[in-house]
Length: 83
Image 1 (cartoon, rainbow, N blue to C red):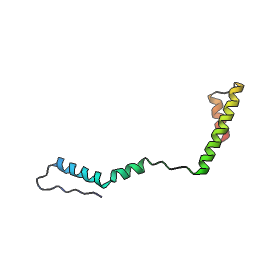
Image 2: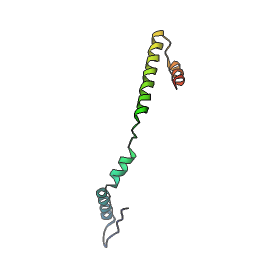
Image 3: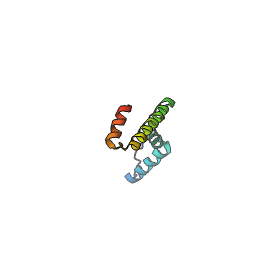
Image 4: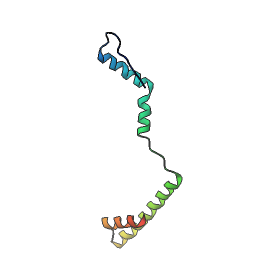
């Protein structure tokens, strides 16, 4: 934890500037941003499952389009059925 104490005859602006500089030098913000925006990588099996799901959905959508039966309701029903 970073602490900055006010020196004698130091203005609040200078104290804030000194605190900001120490925070930047410590790297606390960089670590926080890294963990905040970090995206967990999916396992190989999860990626495979998603790919297979997309292939099945795409194949079924193409089939429905050829028959002229594809619309938003058909897509919802299809996704519900595939899960």
